[in-house]
Length: 416
Image: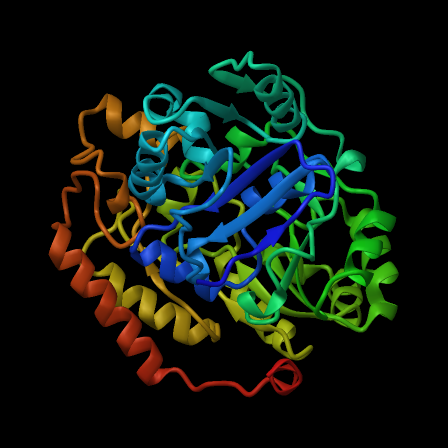
């Protein structure tokens, strides 16, 4: 078994950090998206130098080391991986090892998570993780470590490059640009977990990219282009670094010609574009009514002119959707000419407005979190049944891949 460990010369504590990943469609999706898991890498980044760190990311196939010599096992996870995380936590607790849980699901389902752990991390882990370690050494653990203030992004430390090598992530790497998003989409956890939008100092980003072990970089931002002037300055600063980078963006990005040109010159070559559905009613209902569907074809053609690949997942199962949505969506994505798409069912993650509304109306059909992976319908829908919806989504993906003419991107040859 391959182990990824950074040993501390003056070790005071030995920690094993695990990104749990259940065997679900969500895991397959995350693996294809490349980049690093923010949770365990942020945790490793803020760990003191006297802590020996072992990192395990099940998403990319790194196996759990059940014979680890760690004093503490910390398991980070999102909702689809909760059942797997609890399985791991319970096994290590039986061995007498101190277990800590953190991540999005833990923050929104605190009592549930605490029933499987000695302590939980609530909110952003920086500073409360260090507090937990000091309490552990002092023998005075609390059950809940709660982040009560937002992190100053100038205090964010770069991800460690000396534990898990870049080849494990298909020679990609992640550098954080910002946290938070001002949008309040009903199905999104971002604005609930990160209560404010904050940017990182540009020079810190530049230095981390310079020190990255690859030139294929995910610039991590929940909503990249909120601050236009900041982005223009950032793109100008990273242009000399000769990297290829990818990120998540809103379609309105393409309306700003100066911003697009600056991004492309700095190496932007792949965008996960937030379109979601061709249904205007669904977009309005989910607080995304600002999206101009009529301009998408023009916008995507413009982005393509810069050799930029467009990936956009399509959601099936919004309130207004019926059986016609599959043909409508297929025609839509073929017409606007996106390059990659996947069919996904809206996931009512705990902590979101969607979850609260469905739970209050008694429409949730299961609390088996492994089914909250985007491939299962976990709430009652007037027009869809679970297996029929699943099969129709598979048919949508098959038809898209058969009918869509694949575009050849110049940058693919450089990365491969």
